[in-house]
Image (cartoon, rainbow, N blue to C red; front, side, top):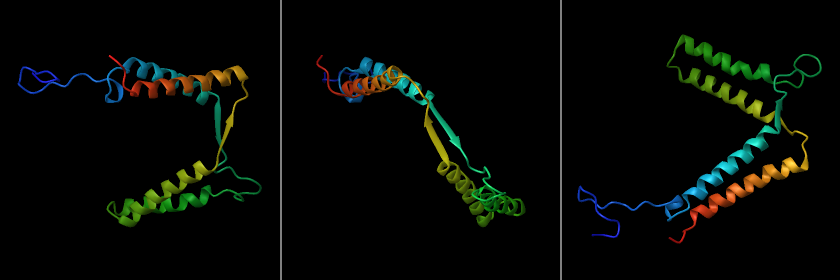
Amino acid sequence: MSETGASLGGQPRRKFEGAGGTPGGVGEFFIGVGLAAVGFYLLFNHVYVQTTFGHPSGFGVFGSSFGLSLVPLLLGIGTLFVNGKSILGWGLTVGGLLFIAAGILMNLHIYFRTTTLFDVLVMFGLIAAGMGLIVKSLRPHKP
């Protein structure tokens, strides 16, 4: 009989391994994931994201590229209605969507909501403890 044992079908049966292919650590891994998840949830719950994309500043379109970014998308959609297999139409449509998505991402403003020091320490402490347990669970444990 091999070290891994034998199953009824004659094939060697693998012994159960813990987190990271090492013995033990499964409980630590899931507790770490839970702690880190709660910490990240609390952190992300204190962050506001705002965009000014497409918001005109001044008179009309000065400082805004939203209207211009719609042109390739609209041309691509129109081309696809004429010929659904048009490579140019698909290129303009996908390119227009990517251009709009990039414009939105470039105009994001991320703010951290005012909070107490205790809340910040709890958030980052949970994240650090969770990550520490995850890394610890991947190391071999003594049986």
